[in-house]
Image (cartoon, rainbow, N blue to C red; front, top):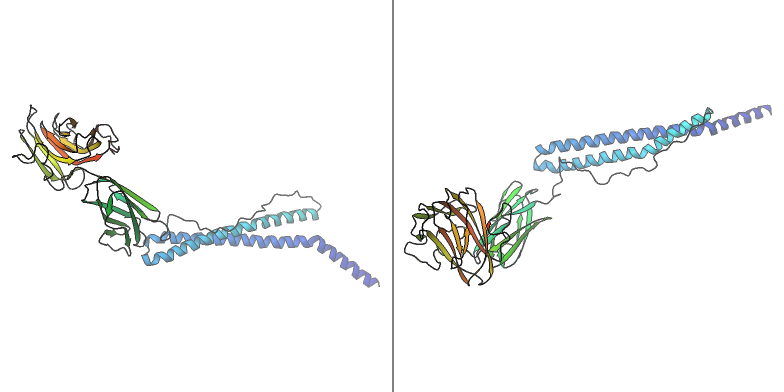
Length: 408
């Protein structure tokens, strides 16, 4: 019996030791496990960041066939990086809690009380959306940009008016554009579809950029708007009917120039007593040609040269006339524009302005047909381009149009 009693006593002592030190040993084990998990998470994050960085650095030298694999590696590396960070952070509460518990229990076993410590209780969830870097972008993740050149045009009713659409940022040599027109106009095509980066009848494709030609025809006088859409990218151009025919002299110095109220004349389209010549020359404000007038006669009564064209308009209505001019060795009165048959509406220009400047003039038409007339009556050289007449008043005061201002 004494032996049995001795055995029972030893068993009770061992049980008491387990009750006292067992939780401490378990806490140490869990803490070690949490520490290992944190380390593994940090290592995974570092590896993922390394893979993503390697893919981003390599993309500039990659061929199109290799780009897709680099994109996959980059995204997978980022996901591993974020998952590793999140896994490590998730173990932090258990690690801190385990260390605190060990300290508390160790302090309790030695008879020293340990104060409670605050610990992180909310783990961070694994990120589900990969981060992006400027180094690489998944194919097709962004739409190309579209832009019309110019953004404003002036067309003669019934005559085709060419427009240019520039598409930039093309991915994989493919893009599509849908057009929408409003107002009294028709367009040469309703949509564009380009595959494989190949040039087409409408588009000249060069790498990530394409230049496409579109023709718009105004069916009658008015204002039309043409919109282009490619994915989420949009562009628009406004086209006004220009009542002046051949206002940019792209068709030369020909009819309907020379059809004003005082024409025709034996001297031809450009007539008068001044020693002056008019010729269509290359260059200009826009297009490939413009009108140049050289006058060698000083100002004197009834000594001038002129040309004009008869323009059908809405009588007794507001109209806006604009023109682009630059001059060389100019003198006062060298160049004016007379509107209406009475020459009563006069738009003067500045002498000695070598840069192209736009001029505007609002007026009321006298009748259903008026003259738009160019007059030179002093020495100097004038360059004239883009005469435009539209219904409605100009949005700017008469005279020189301020830089950056829209006349209409």
